[in-house]
Amino acid sequence: MPETETKPNVPVKTYNTSLPKLDLSASNLQIEWSSWLLQYKIFLRATNLESENDKRKVSLLLHHMGGEVLEIFKSFNLDLDNVTHEALVKKFGDYFSPKKNITMERNKFFNKKQNTDQGIMEFVTELKNLAKSCEFTETDSIIRDIFICNMRSEYNYIKEKLLEDGELTLQKSIEIAKSMEASRQRVSQLDSSEPQVLKVSSNPSQNFRRSRSKSNHRYQDKNHGNSDHRKSSQGSVCQKCGYNHRFKCPAYGKTCAKCGQRNHFAKMCKSPNNVNNIESEYSECGDSESNQYQDFFVGSVSSSIWEVPVEINGNVIQAQVDTGSQVNIISRPET
Image 1 (cartoon, helix red, strand yellow):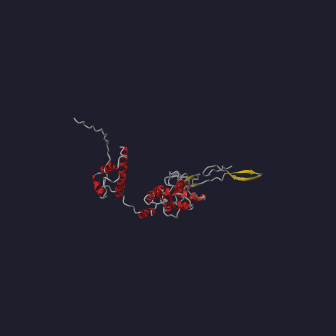
Image 2: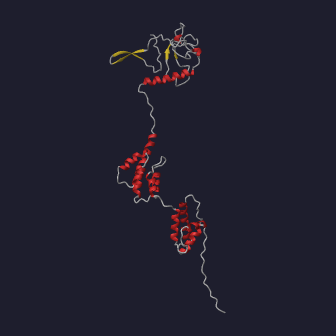
Image 3: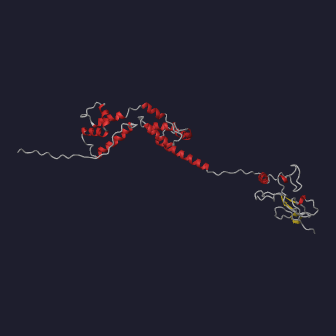
């Protein structure tokens, strides 16, 4: 019997993958292709397929992209057996990434102004992203110029500072702008936290009149409507209390210290009795603040002012005694 030729065992490479198909229905095919290509390269490295020959890798590329991509591949008019893996990847890249209009991209960049809701760093970041598609040879210097010129008006104080130095780099411009913006914010916070100072009149009589007017106003509001005790004429003096008042008479309900009758003060009493007396105009009001300034009167004092002789440097003068009371009605006894 003829000998049977024994073939050597060839190991078969196997791998598991969850690599998704390329989504041709994506709204932005350029982004979809870039994302998918990155996953595909990771897959080749993870499965040790990077070193495979072009025929094997071209087949892997088309297989994992999905059957719908074959129609696009046919439009390239490429030979499946001769095209290299690198050339095919570039072909798909050109297909999914239309040629950029450099003029249009630069126009968007040069006309980009800082939005009202953008801070310094957000504006710089957007300028850098726009510059990527402009293919500038000196990107940083151009970004610096647009950054300075297109700041919104509230940052004019930063713009003026940056324009003073013609040798600024982009990074230095950003640092200065951030520092000045932070300083302005700190000053603004300090200004808003300063305590308010109330204006006080230097004229004591003005302060007294304002306080007295306020007290009288509350007194009148409290007694508004008591028409039974209003004076008959605003220009006349009340015969009960001796004052001109518009609303309730302060003597109403009070007991006269001379005759013991009610509803009048002793100074207006018609009784012949002669009794020392003092009444408060606002004794009716219970508001402590309204009693801060009170008018007092003396109904009758029969004795003379309390004075005593005082010798000063050999000279004798008459001096009135200060009792320290709010109203001095102390009389001196007859000798």
